[in-house]
Length: 194
Length: 194
Image (cartoon, rainbow over all chains, first blue to last red; front, side, top):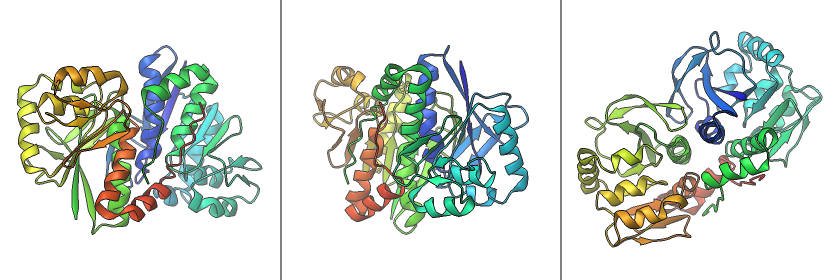
């Protein structure tokens, strides 16, 4: 049984949070004995995302309890978090207690600022690959990868790549067949028209 | 200037709403003179989605005002709406006032129940293609299409297909280059790993 927490914060990128939620949420709905999903923020309640959609966090940091996976989305709201020492302490403390941290898009910038990517391979949104290298020059920046699985830390490229990463994690936890069922249910057979 | 409303309702599918929001929201953020996005529900406030994520609707039906595009998502919450005569009246009334109705996934079932797809080509989630034909046998069900653009009514296949449809609509309204910029920004170059 995997308990998956999806972090929300002011100016989070909508799809960075909702893409993984769709994948893990479908998993939890169809196999409730295998997974559950919870949203968390500094405190429960409304959270305004980067392009104006409002989410509502179920739990606050203080009462969310233990997680097997923490999904750390990106979005322009990550920029102030890079310098928020209280938040970086929280990220490091959560890292100690959480078997897997999985970032989407610029979420990996915050992981780097917290020192969690030291000497590891990682990726981020294409526009921030250089910034990732600046934040921690020891990071082996993977410029072409859709996501990078380094065991207890997984990072993905920008926005939509969080869906690919989440399907990969379902395959890792529950097998390729389960991940394929979810992919089929959500018709993730994209044919971008442009 | 296009004002795009994304409908929310109890048990809406997360990605059906958040995928189009990402596309149209990126458009509105980068080109605020071209588009804006608003969420609407029967009344403003929290709306629980199909897999447990909570959205927060900005506006209620009474105060949302005029829209250029109404996005009608799917999800298991559509099933009670198929028989909700008050809601079907609202859909028909909105249709009269709204130049474009765009459904995602099983949202098209509600459009069919409201009589809006009579004699038109349309699609839906793969598991509901037969149900769409039952709800209105005059619908020309397109079983293979990712989305169907019939002018003032556009329907898409399941869940993820709403992203493809939304990119198509940006291309229709603002040109292929604008849609490509958005696609690039959201890294919608999927490589499903399973």
